[in-house]
Image (tube, rainbow, N blue to C red):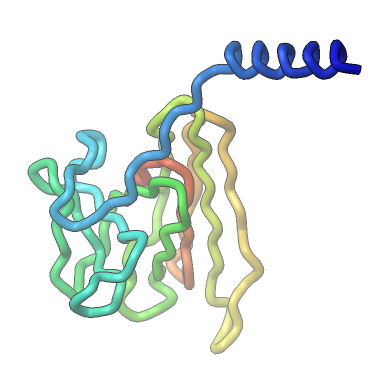
Length: 164
């Protein structure tokens, strides 16, 4: 019995030692903190509400740092998600965060998967079921955002870019 326990412990130790190291999750964007070079000009939403306003004020990567965006803000053509959902409004609502057109989501590391979940306004007070686009690890995804988009949710460690 002791021998079996010792063998099991040795096998677990060996498997753990040989397992590939996991990449650290990217840091959640925060105002006045550094942003990755790939995110230059991109906008994101902080993971926690801004203390002064209590709301999620968008942040834009400028000169290597996340800076608060003055509200109301113009829609952005580049967004960064670092894992958790970045929930945005489309043109189906007032003050959209992004515009309709062709978009792509590009993973920023080899293990990242880009995921987008969209809903569109069908008629007054009626919103569609979600339309989901998922990418494989390290695969760029392409999709269209409709002019009637109600909500668009980006997730994964990805850079989202409006192509046209």
